[in-house]
Structures are given as C-alpha cells and as structure tokens.
Length: 195
Image (cartoon, rainbow, N blue to C red; front, top):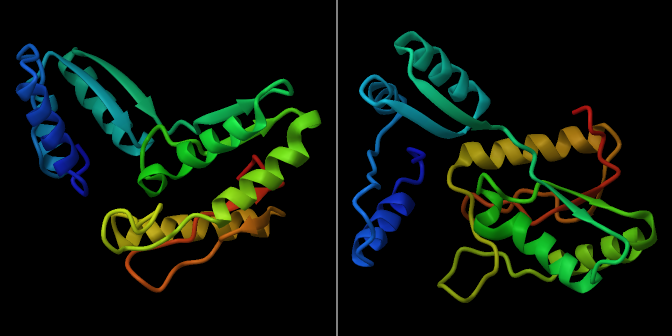
C-alpha cells in the first residue's frame, strides 16, 4: 500500500482473515525500497499507482523476465447521458469524486455530460458540493475531511490554479483551508484537457 496510508490495507487484510477467506492475500508495508525489494522476490506484479513508479516496476520486472500488470495514472471519467436521472448522477459524481477527500485511485476526476442535461447537472452538482460539510472534527460532523499530507494539498492547489490559468471556472470551492491538510471541495467547468 501507499506508505502514506498503510493502515487501510492492514485493516482490509484483518477483515479478509476474519471472514475466513482463502489465504491468498498478504500485505507488506514500507516505502519505495520495500516495494523494490518485493519485486525482486515475486513471480508476478500487479501494481496500481503512479506512472513514475510503474515505469520503475516495469523495468525491474523486465530485468527478471517476470510478468507485470500496471494500472497507471488514469483520469477516471464519468459519463452522464441525456436520459440519465440527473439527481442520481449528481449524487454519484459528488460521492465518486470526493469520498476519502478524492484520494482514491478510482475517484471520479472528470465528468462528461451530454448537452441536453449539462446546465441542470452542473448547477445541481455545484449546489450539492457547496453544501458539503468540510472539517476535521469527530466522525459524523463533516462530509469531507483532510488530505493525507501537506504535499497532497499542494498538488491539488497547483492543479486548480493551473486549470484556472488555462481558462477553467471555479463554481464552488477552489481554496486551501486553514485547518488540517484541507482543500475545499471544488467543482471546475470549462477545463482545458491539454493540461
């Protein structure tokens, strides 16, 4: 797992064992050196993560002539067709993009909406996201919490500023918060796909 958030996979492994699932799931925690050492002793690598790390794994696996499957740097689009239930699609986009503060490799990162539904969808999504409770308090007092690290907040802030500079408009959010490692839940429109 990510060296920043290893406990999630540790808990998943505990749950796996609690339900009596087959003994085919294990976890090793640590930084990049731990992952590199692991690639040196396994027969196959399945990796989900950054393109930079995936390249390193591919080279290392090729050097050992072992197989690997790499799921890297996807942009996780959501498509909303004109006959969609707009309220359901809005809820799916908000939840899919912001669960775990958007820090999940399968989080919705962009939404394509067919023209007949676009204005209504965008308006409802901006309203929904603006109503989310943001904070770092006890469970149940917020809908969106902190990012995992200060570096992640900086990445999100940089992405939003770059999008804005390229012509995107912020409909809600768009700013770093003062408490924790937080960034306001944000909806951007008119985003330039070349950045």
